[in-house]
Amino acid sequence: MLNQFEFKGANAKAEALQQQVKEAAKTQNSLENQRQTGSSVGTLEQSKEYVYALLDAMIASKGSDMFLTAGFPPAMKLNGAITRLSDAILTKEHTAAFARSIMTDRHFEEFSDKNECNFAIVTKTSRFRVNAFKQQGRVGLVMRVINTEIPQLSSLGVPEGLKNI
Image (cartoon, rainbow, N blue to C red; front, side):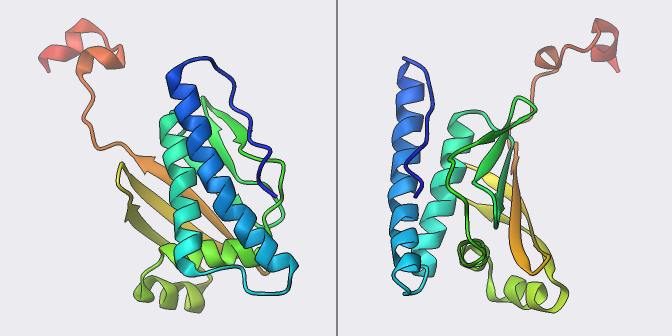
């Protein structure tokens, strides 16, 4: 079950992130219960909601990449380090459902033919580049946030001389 999320911090941002992760965990727990009882892993809509909730949590914490791989817990890259979002291990059924839920029919057809597909998705808050792949018979997803804001030159820490080029 994915109820072992732990984000520390006393500020409102940390609390909002914790709430987003709890919502994602509810969906994941429902999917896990269905898997354990022998029913399907849930609807594609439930899977999509879970993936989007994880992506929203990643954005709120300023993460850059999300990793969903069978046999491992959901994780994100935060400040250059891989950070687990849970201790719960995703199943191959979960990751296959997560991948299908965010693909168009055309993407799914390409994925089925080539065991890999690259595409973009847009949530309410951000845009992401997605690499869906099959490795050792298991589906995995890597999603990277695409920054849509052009940074100011001053925020990049470049030398003053480059500003005139």
